Image (cartoon, rainbow, N blue to C red; front, side, top):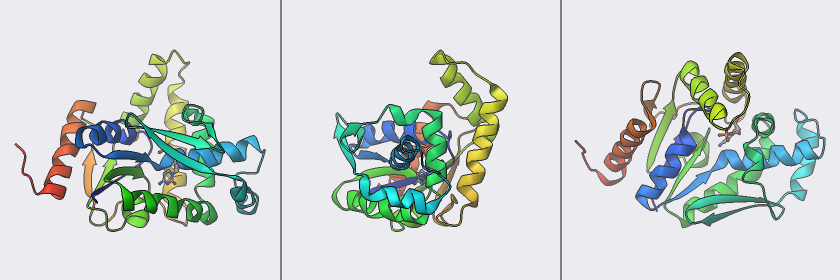
Length: 226
Ligand code: DC
């Protein structure tokens, strides 16, 4: 099985790129952020204190998460409900970042993530895929971009969705999430030693796609491109 681990901060373009790459390679794309978002959403709905590991851990036995791949697209089911769209809300992202700091939550998702890689060629994205989940991944990529570039992309996305945009708040939210993700004790966001660093600050989506595809082809198939 071929596994491609893509880690990096939020807003670096991981999920759009991983989706396109998976389609080009014929792999499945596993978005592990969606799993943390689903747990965050459940904890929010239950009114739990997201920072309290005991409270959040007590909810885990009530949660069943299932992934389904429909036309190559990942759908995520939380106790049978398709929450693929609901979890995209900013609130669910913040809740995900908070619950993801708890070792009990990470442990709960680890086996599910590893099992997927045993049975499929895949691209998996997240924060700790190359460092913890799939330390023997065939290809490891650390995808990043400056805070400014990521904030500009997020604002554009919001405007396209017709939503109000507060640029300062968008940037502050990204900085807050980066801090939480890189400073937690368990599986913090960091580049694996054997990961290839790709900085997309000055690249558009098309250029980023080509850069990543070249890395994957070289690492997984020994191909030299261009
Ligand atoms: O990639 P995303 O924005 O959907 O992720 C949501 C949050 O989940 C992110 O702030 C950190 C957390 N996360 C994580 O800790 N580990 C992962 N493998 C994926 C996401």
